[in-house]
Image 1 (cartoon, rainbow, N blue to C red):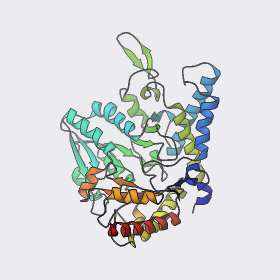
Image 2 (cartoon, rainbow, N blue to C red; image 1 turned 135 degrees about the vertical axis):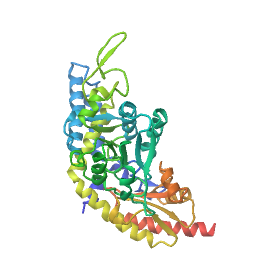
Image 3 (cartoon, one colour; image 1 turned 90 degrees about the horizontal axis):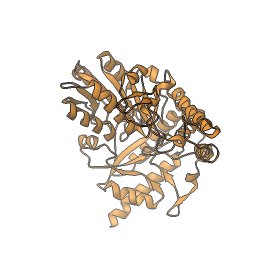
Length: 408
C-alpha cells in the first residue's frame, strides 16, 4: 500500500478547507491535483530559463529546448515507446484523437469502410469519428457492453471484418471504471487488419502502460489527469504511420522549407507540433512522470483497487444507493452512482457543502448513460492521495444528504 499521508503532503491544495470543512477531492477522473514537485518544476522553468524552443541559438532558448525535449524522453520511457520521435505533444487527449482522425483517418478511411468504437466511449472518442465517417461515406459500428458495464468481447468475431479500418476504445471507462481487456482487443483487431487507437486518458494515469507490449498503433492521453498541468497531452504513434500521415496543423516549426506556393514538412515529431508548443506545460508533464514513476504505477493501480473496493463496500451499505458498472476487482478508482432518486447535481451540491468534491452529470458519455437507462450519475473518483477515511466520510455525508432531502 502507498504511504498516502506522505503523498498527501506533496499536494498543497489538499490542506485547504471548503465551506469550513477539510477538502475531500474525489474528482480526479476529471482532473487530478498537482504535487509541489510539478508546481516547482514549472515555476523554475518560467523563472530561470523561459524562452521559445528550437529556434534560438542563445543560452535561454537552448536550456528551454533541452528541458522540453527531456520531457519527451521521459514520456517515451514512461510508455515504453520504441523511439522518442513517436511522442507528439498535443494540448490534451481530445486533440490527440482529432489529430489521428484528421491526419490518418482522412487518408485511410473511405466509402463503405468502418470505424469500430465501444458503447462506453467518452465523447472525445466518438465525435471526431462521427465527423470523419460523415465526410467520407464510411460507417460507425459499436462493440456493445453488458448491463454491468463490461465489453462484450465475444461479439468481436461478428464485427471485425475487412471493412473495419480502425478500432478505437478506452483502456478504462471514465464513468464505470471498467478496465478493459486491452491486450486481447488489440491483438484481435490487428489480426483483422485494423489500426488500433487507445484512449488512455483514464488508463495512463492509473496503471502501467507499455505501448510495445500492447502492440497498439496510437495512444492518446492528457497530463492534467496524471498530476501534470492542463494544456499538455500526448499522442503516441507508430513511427511508420506518423511518417506517412500529412500534417494536422500548418505553421511554424512543422516545416522544413516554405516557398510561396509549396512547403516541405519537418521530421518527426515536429511535423505535428505547429507553432509555439506548450513548453512549460510539457516540462510539468515530465515532472509528473518523474513523480508517478517514483511511486510505481503498479503501486498506483493496487492502491486504487483497494480504495475502490473499500469505498464500494461502504457506499453499497447506504440505503437507496446503486453503483453502475462491474465489481471492484474489474475496475479502477471510479465509482458512478445514483441515490434515492435524487438528481446528481443536488447530490454534488450538498456534498460540496461538506467539503467533498464529486462530479455530476453524464461525464461526456451520453451514449453510455442512455445504454444504461440513466439520465445522469454522481461520480466519485479516487487517486493516489485518497484514503479509506475519505470513503467513510463520503458514505456518512450521503446519508446526511438523504436525511436533508427527506425533510425538504
